[in-house]
Amino acid sequence: MSNDVCVICQEPFNNEVVEGLPHQKITLPCFETHVCGRSCLALWFDNGRHQTCPVCRQRVSDEFAAGVGNRSFYQKIIDAATNAGLSIFDSLETALRNPLVNIVLFGGSAFSLMMASDLSEEDTDTLTTVFNAATVGSIVGGVLRLNHLPVIRVLPRVELLSRLATYYSGIGAAVDAAHRIQVIPDRPLLALSQTTASSMFGFGLGFSAAEAIHRLLGNRQDAVPNLPEING
Image (cartoon, rainbow, N blue to C red):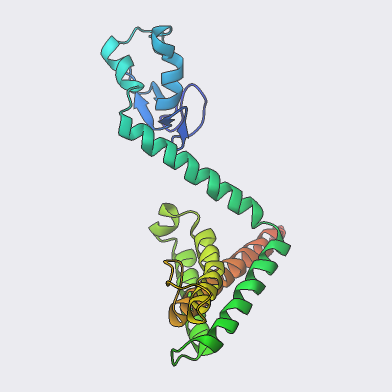
């Protein structure tokens, strides 16, 4: 019996919130290999209806059963926020799988950025800033993928975040430009300076390019068949 999967659902342990509880590893007091996800075990106990180990049916104490499903008010708030955030990310990822959506957002961001640069009072070469930031972004993206640094595991959706930053740069630059021509009287929090917007756009562009190249090379390697060895 493996200690790496839940004995109830046979899925690996993780921090995904199910029924308000994370699917984290819980070891039952009867035996060290009898392990379940917290959310699965809470459903199994079902408020005392099955207060036994799912494997050997040995009864567990009231304190243990109550502790499995015990969540504080603040934990409930955190769980709700986590679920809402994951739902938003899932929706964004689904939308950004459409190439047409990416083209429209990228083109709109680039257009807004260049139009805003004409209204900016900063002495900044927008194209140079974008190019330099894109170079840094591509290097960072390549290093993270080649060396499998821990940040990839901590932020599995870092590519999505970089792409959103790219698109947001155009919005921020446009809002700042609208403020400069007094369409918006007070400078909003969403506004970005020309240097900041150009840097965000370039870095996100370079990072996304590195990710695309990584996937392309991976697909090509997978497409190469394993040729049989020829002996002497």
